[in-house]
Amino acid sequence: MSDQSGGKTPIPVVNSLPLPNEPAPGPNPLKVFVASAVAIALIAGAVTFGVYLKHKHGLQNALASLNLAQPDLTEIFGKQKLRVLVLGVDENYTQNDIMYTANSRSDTMLAVNVDLASHQVGIVSIPRDLWVHVPKSGYEKINEAIADAGPMRSEQAVIDNLNFPPFDNYVVLKIDATKNLVNAIGGLDVNVEKDMDYDDSWGHLHIHLKKGPQHLDGEQVVGYIRFRHDPEGDYGRMRRQRQVIGDLVKQLKNPAIFAKLPALIGLVQDNVRTDMTYDKLFYLALALRDETPAMVHTVQLPADEGWTDGQSVLFYDAATGRPIVQKYMVAGFGNEFDPSTVHVIVHNGSGQPGAASAMADYLRQRGFDVVSTGNAATFNNPKTIVTGNDKNIAGEVAKRLPVKDANVTAGSVQGGDIEIVIGRDYRTQ
Image (cartoon, rainbow, N blue to C red; front, side):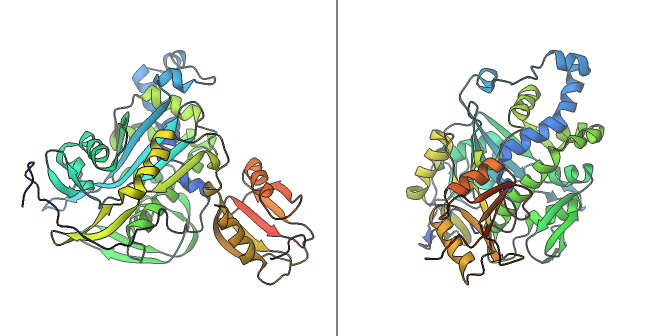
């Protein structure tokens, strides 16, 4: 049976097992969720400014045309919200084993909504295997839309099938963009969440990584974010993609990165395609340079597993998905504290058996993302201590704990945004 577009009408076989909005995160900080748009904006600040200089024929001309104080994004963009579809394209190989990306499918698809006044960011991860009707092509996986007719076809497929509002811009990243960027900045520190071993000679993919923090080169980083040979499949891969985006953002915010600017100038031109102008990208980077984890809100679009035309696909769970799209892409977020954006590590420093697990359950019931529990170095802590990369966020967490006047400190937290060391002032229920 064919539809009027010439494509095949799906005969869905659906397993009524809705996939979770977000799988349990690995041991990485919440800054892994710094939006793809924010990441791209910050990359623009470190990289595309060089391209902008080139475009303006020198630093003096560039600075003269830019307002480097506090840019008013609503005035610059002429709107309240900026919606961007971010697409990462995969690679193909010729019979002579030469890589090309023309007419490639989108390996990654992220819808990003930036509130230009409050700087709150919403991100929706769109599974690449969603079975949808693509305009002028018929029914197929949504990742094929860009191969049919470019990024605007992908935009239309998302709008038509998933109830998204129109997008203002698109950003297309080549598969080698991440590898080239990581190599250009001298590698990337990544907390590898598990041992990974996989070889695909045909796909030119060789992944051999050990669990734990390590310094990876560009090819290793790409292997890390492409690995999906575990029970989580694509869902784990999407999480690791966001982790690496966050790690890149953290490193690109380091002022020392500007010393590498000459090597990065051509990177964006070679690896990034967008219909957003360089000056707007730079202003976006400038305005969002102080983005905090609490300002970034992420979710994965829900779907049901199924089969059609003999292939495994995903079907959009519209009943669950529409409220998500409305919240993340239309209504947006105010300045209220959102506990779901905070990754928490809980350590038992009280000596009470089960205290860490009890506290973790308490926090999860209130929307926090608890990434791990364990014992503290000692069991003689009189008061509960809340430590965070951002002291304001640590203070918000402390307000919601079942203890009075927890100690709040600012400090680095490995593997999360907040560390809670439970003291003897906490009593399990």
